[in-house]
Length: 166
Image (cartoon, rainbow, N blue to C red; front, top):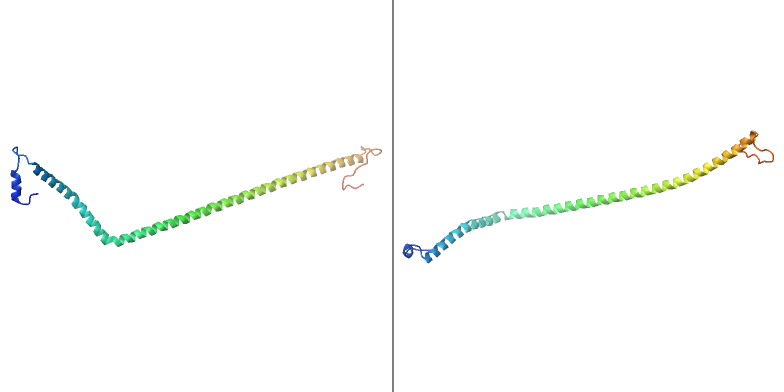
């Protein structure tokens, strides 16, 4: 970069015969262009950094308060989630236990009904056999009363249970 007018004019006269700038002038132009481009980039960057520093200085306490509040909200959400998870697990456990109790009761009732059916079936068979025997005896007794039975030399008449002679 030229510091004075004299240096500027002296550089202006140092051209080749074709009128084009010399190598030193080209290097200086490149450096100037690089400097202008760098300034165009660095000025907004510096301004943004300064603004950020000022914001941090002004609102640093507020940001810290919000950050701690955000941590508090996150902790509160974790607590709520844990409480919900515990409630869900408790409910699932209660449902599972209720289902097992119901299944156990149903097995017990089925077993009791099966045993009662077997007992009633055996009792019914006994009652049917007793009724058939009583019917057979009643028929024999009735046959003897009507004269169709063998009174002499045959089997004796059998009275049905509870029948009186008359």
